[in-house]
Length: 202
Image (cartoon, rainbow, N blue to C red; front, side, top):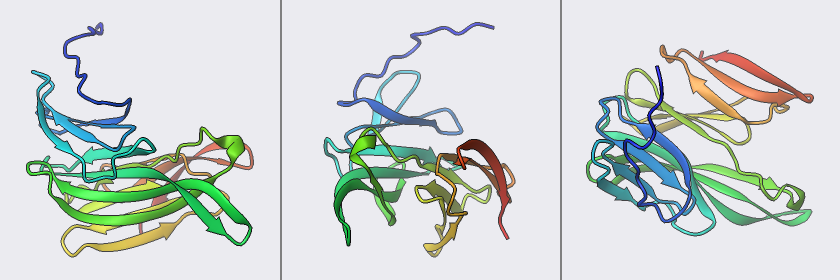
C-alpha cells in the first residue's frame, strides 16, 4: 500500500483550514477555515457545491468542528469567536462558542445553541478551544463535546438540549462517540498526566 498525493487540490478557502469531514456516501467533503466559512465540495472534481457563511465571518472567528449527519442531509458545526470577557476581577480575552445544525442541500440554518465562553490568559495567547461533534446512530441526536468538559446532546426532533458536566479537574481535549452511541471516550489531562476515559450515558 502507498499514498498518492495530489489527486485533488482544493484552494477556494480564503483562510487556513481548521477541520474536515466526509459525507458517508463519499460525495462531499466539508472544510472549515479560520475566518468562519464552511465549504462543501466534490472530491472527484474539486467543484464547490455550497458555501455556508451563517457563522460569524471575521478574522478572529474560526470553525472548530464540522460533521455530516449519518445520511448526509445535515451538518453540525461549531465556531469560535474571539471576545472580551468581564468578571469581578476585570476584563480578559476569550472565545465564545456557538453550534449550528444546518441543511446540507440548501445551507439553511435549522438550529443554533450557545456552548458558552472560555477565557485564556495573555501568556497562553495561542490557546484555541477544542471541540468535537458527532451524530448518534439513530441519526436524530447530536453529540457535542467542548470547553469546560461539557457534553451537549441535542435532539433534532424537538430541539431539546441536555448538558452534562464531567469532573471539574478535567482539561478539555477531544472526544469520540462510540458506534453504539451508548458510550463515549475523552482525552484529557488530570494532575499533570494525560488520560483517556470512557463514559456511559445513563
